[in-house]
Length: 102
Image (cartoon, rainbow, N blue to C red; front, side, top):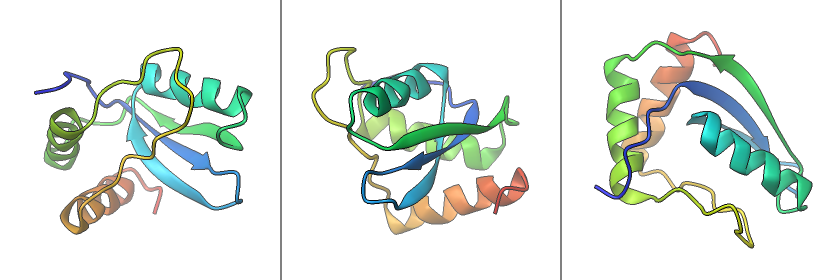
């Protein structure tokens, strides 16, 4: 495993082109997204829900993220969107439904 991040929140990220998407994240990753917004790499980030339940969907997505991505260092020079497989897109949609976001 590359990471051992526990995903605990849902946030909405708005890219500089005006498109936005939902991400399952945690406070550290949200802090990195806030820094990305301050540095102009993305337009905005906002937390929609904190302390989401640790459902089987969240655990599956958490495993995917930890196996495929690393936490960016504080001195990053771009924003990296976590690219999901079609299967993980469905998992995220399930998480959003479970939390009444979608």
